[in-house]
Image (cartoon, chains in turn brown, green):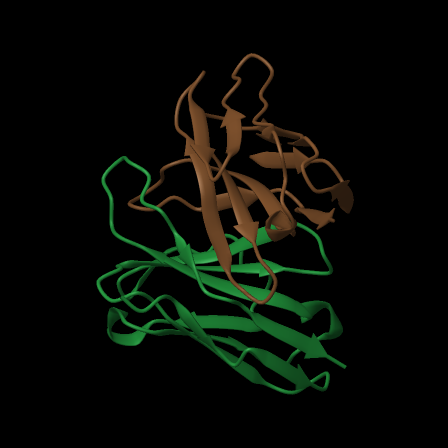
Length: 114
Length: 116
């Protein structure tokens, strides 16, 4: 079955540091890939997505590129802020029967300090 | 537009008791999903409704879990009887119905269930 592996957390960075959170996946078909973010006390929010190979998803300074050859979708941001502190989830989905159930990784907690 | 809401936000019950979680999706969203995150592990799919019909319930762990979506609006997830391993955060998500393309799932804040 499908699966997603992402780096263990927590990750602690100083403000303005560079962020990389690694994510690799296993899928039977040709999935769409996502990063979701959960801020404290809130639900998951879609951060960015990519639906085909070599697509780059981007939002709020975050980027991730769909790499089919390495089955990866690493999340990057050039300069993190304290407000980026949250839990980040890598996920994939394959369209089935009118819906797209998501397969998630374990989540990576990010803490950004001044 | 109101987002996905879940009730309660927290529930603490004893082993063997019954708990019912509720999810109100965004109006007009025919897809409704339930997910669960246990002990800081990955978020796992439980089931998927299209309107009032169960489209996929392959993630339901056992027959102690019963999900309903009467009238195709809100959904309930009942756990009866609850066991210790059922503790976790239960998320609900909704999306529009799509044909072959990804429609963004909007998540609720989750219900944190603790079974003692």
